[in-house]
Length: 486
Ligand SMILES: *Cc1c(COP(=O)(O)O)cnc(C)c1O
Image 1 (cartoon, protein in one colour):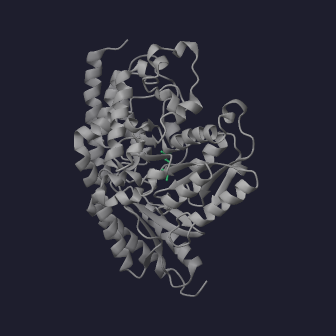
Image 2 (cartoon, helix red, strand yellow):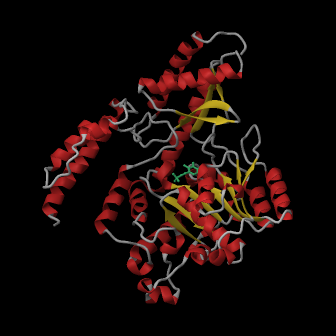
Image 3 (cartoon, helix red, strand yellow):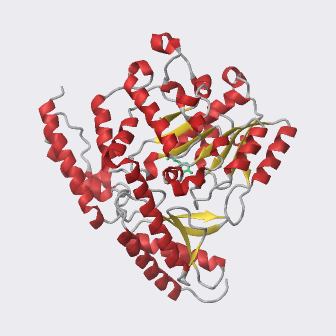
């Protein structure tokens, strides 16, 4: 069925289309103004019975898909966290598809397995992780599809280990406890649910009101009380760079407390962890050497298209011990000999993509120095934006700036309720203009604007424009805010 010459023609046209799209991105509104159902109403309900010219598909992309897309690669996309889809990673993805291998086991693609091992060992060193996380030292890394899958996988390993294997045969017993903070990503709560522990297993630890970082003393107290009451600590999740305000939990004392009670200690550094590739940000990962696992996403801020979440564990046997099931049709000599890594045992699904190739392509295209420059550029832009906000009485920093995340609040002088309303109004005004996309969070119950800088095309001038839009919106909103205390 495959016509390779037709593929060549269509392939070049696809690359050309991507180039033109990326070139004109800046002129597009970041978020589309479409009503629900608009896209469905424009698409032909009848599926094509016969081949169509590729231009038909590209035309539909231009007329229907692009106008109804939120442009995550837009230089003025400052929402959530960045989802870098750098062009080098696109080539890696294409080559991965070209090879079309299934890397579930070493024997089904030795190259996929071993390239992934080499890259994960290399990135462990580049991030300054303890050598104990490398294959050479009995640990190892794996590329998961997402940080959510990574935490689910380590939760399963933790259930196995902390039950001395009983979980594998008998399942959960209702005594399991998992420790997070009020700021921990919901992926952990989801993993707890998926693993069948029930929400009762989740212990939510208080954070410091100022820094929003988990309180090690509160964690220690909860662990102790639970153990005394007959519960079993399974997993403690520390976060380096929380999703709300980029807070950094004190990993070392958290890990100490977790280990003292035999819990698995996981560090979720999904967004911020990659910054440790810069020596000046290494301290972010202080204490991770005493954790059992750490994950960070190359697909947020490291130029690599979704999906590529890097997960390291200190014990290479831990995930397979929990997850290996070998039906006869998967048996092979290499696995039986125990001399190879079978990544199917490090994740929930059996099949797996050649994700390492896109990371390799990014290294090939920009090198570690290019990655560092990418991170440093955004951190500098964030520092500048934070400085402008500090100097403007209409704004306040809602949290200390964290790497390239700046959290802002509008100051009305009329109290917190009015401030929250004004902050929300400013965010909505900037988003409605289409000039930038911002999202919000709450800390405690205060509303704040998150400015997450980090796009592959974001330059200083885009941050300048954003600041101008924020100032203009604040002027309008404050003029409409009564100066009475609320
Ligand atoms: C983004 C994020 C996640 C979820 O990442 P996915 O890869 O989309 O699952 C988890 N934790 C933190 C701290 C995050 O910032």
